[in-house]
Length: 268
Image (cartoon, rainbow, N blue to C red):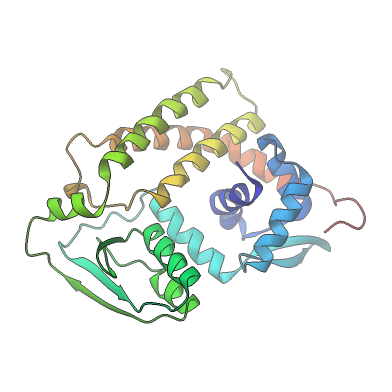
């Protein structure tokens, strides 16, 4: 777990619901149980400021960092996918996006990666589909100054076959099985009566690894997935233990946010 990813997890899972801002000293203290050193935290924070994910603020006269509007939107969307809070029934229509081809190779790569993160898959030369429109799509296109044709349509064929062609569900399923084995080993490493800090550390690692599915699982409606989909069992295991460890983890976060003192003089 690198410092930048850990900070995204921390802000998304804890800090965002507490006002979206924290002192730098608290951030350093909160990442200590994850074996992330203070210099790495400060370097990651500086990088996230340059990328418009965080902005400097003063909290009770001490230096801190708050989520930008862009980051708040990204973490809100990520949370709905991580915890599957958007349970709307699929209406059978696909969201189709045909982005204008950018002249810059790097921009084309960013658009491809961004669309894949948002749950879209290519089904032809320059045509992408997703089961639902992503709230972040407009921001992605604007950031690259790219226009795109967008519309909803029904597939005149077998939707399940379309899914098999667009996404490698076998690979995603194998990833869920690996995650489940590793998650069970992680949970079993906890003592019978863990401290709040231990619960926070294990839960943070659990959420961090689960969050990686944002980049690989398009979040397709259950009706389009195989009957024996491994993601179902993995999701039940994640929900059970993320919820069980949350109270202790939350106490540790509250304690650090309330008590972490200032960093050494001259540091941000």
